[in-house]
Image 1 (cartoon, rainbow, N blue to C red):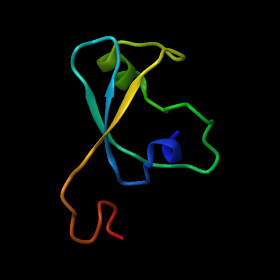
Image 2: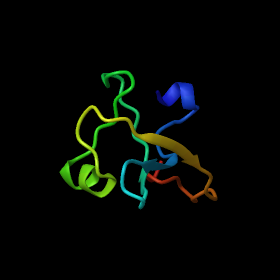
Image 3: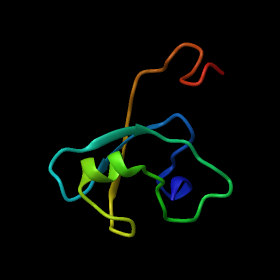
Length: 73
C-alpha cells in the first residue's frame, strides 16, 4: 500500500474512517507488514470509528522538511 501511494517512512498521512474527525500519523513502512493493512492500536481505531478489517481512506499530507529528519537521521 505504501509503495502504491508513494509513501515512505516519515511521511505524514491523514486517515479517515466512519467518524468525521480524521487521524493524522507518520508512516513507518515495515518489510514484514501485510499488504493493504494498517497497524493501529485501540485508540486509533476508536478515533476513526472502525473495527479491524473495515476500510480506511489514506491521504498523503505534504509538510515542510524537518532539519535532521523526523527520526533524527
